[in-house]
Length: 352
Ligand code: KG4
Ligand code: ZN
Image 1 (tube, rainbow, N blue to C red):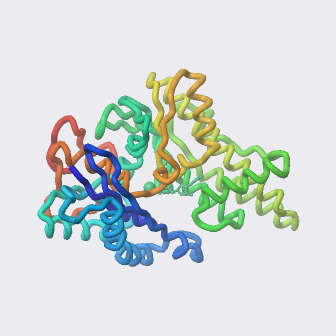
Image 2 (image 1 turned 45 degrees about the horizontal axis):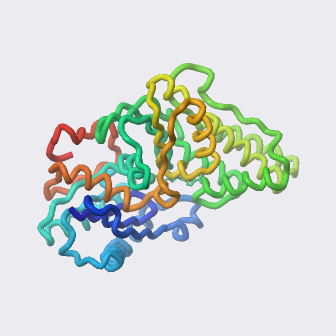
């Protein structure tokens, strides 16, 4: 079965074709970063308008690169939530329209389930069960994953998501949106040129039991540190780099401590990290090291499939479409959608 995947939940238009027999056939992505950079973050109305411009041309492009016609598509999967309402509506209406025109099934997919399953597209995919660490711009969650749709949320952020914290810290350091990769690059400079960092930021909520997170305090810590220095007229490149490194170390260490606790609590031997922040090299390295000490294995997607993309939506949708799940003609997007309400695919429940 060849599934067309459509991702339009935020600031990336991602399109892919996934074949349940032959794997990923083609994918294409258009990032709207240039469109939003002057505003310091995603402007929802601009995002929706750009998805309208890009979705159909990208579908034509992936079909051409897979040397297929639209009549070769057997089913369509699109991101139905969570995400920006207008942006989601673009993908949903295009998916539903194509499904009607081509007379093929369509299914709305959960964006975070897409992220969680993205490492399945790699050569050495994880087996179930595993512990999932979802770290994106909107979510930070630890999830016990027994199978597709069998999710138990073990802990989550009580305030900012890890990616959101990166983006806000970036702003304070005078860096553009999206902040995560830019903070990481600046932190590298502290190591390469300035002997690391003298600052040590807190590891929030690690001194009490449980698996929840809180990242808003780190934002305040970053703000106070940068403000103090700039009031003294001392905020130079070296300080910015050292603050970036202290911030990144604090986020990574906090995630490591909570993942270790969750592995010890669940006894799982596999950890899957997914979502935009899983592209972070320091995080990957810290979790690789921690897991090898615990005799556990870490899995993550290739860099380009950590952040938003169509391949993860095509893959997640294909798994559910293959067991008969599909939506009707009503367009149902869910800007808020708890992942643990998804049906397990074993139960063969038809419709999400
Ligand atoms: O998964 P994603 O593309 O979109 C959402 O579903 O939110 O994640 C985007 C987030 C942004 O906050 C971005 O700053 C962060 O992932 N991010 C990173 C890195 N690359 C992207 N954070 C830290 N280090 C990175 N290398
Ligand atoms: Zn995402």
